[in-house]
Image (cartoon, rainbow, N blue to C red; front, side):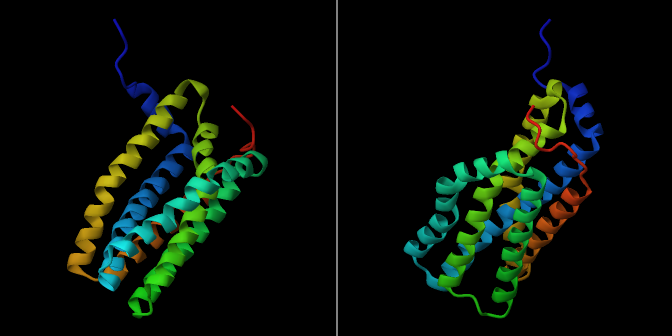
Length: 206
């Protein structure tokens, strides 16, 4: 008889690994926060400009650096401590979300500032992408690596559903600025998780 598509024993083994459990918890919150912010940024840009061109500009500001700089991020991840790269990247991302929160709360945000901040976020994501993915590979044994990667993929897709829903509720019941605060807090949770991870041989290839 063929094995089930998803190996629940491997799932239990993965979450028994402290590093992986910590990272998954922090990463889940961070991904939800990221999708909260993405919806909120588009909403805010529309409120500021009511322009489709500006909405296109905000999307390009975030995703163009990812397309261009991700290969460079891979080179950096191969040569330096991936855990440290991830921590630094999350600190920058938390600072960016905090700046969005404060500027929006103070009515000091403009379309140009919004585009600039999203470009900073895009550069941060691009430089962190490879390190973030390979961290998971370094956390688990080879035999449950596919399970760990599958868990990461599931979390990402679930966050794409939960994040916009949370953003919509925040915008409706409170103020759009608080969506950015939620994202900043989610990055802080991931930073805390990353600081608790102990990986003396993060650089080793599997």
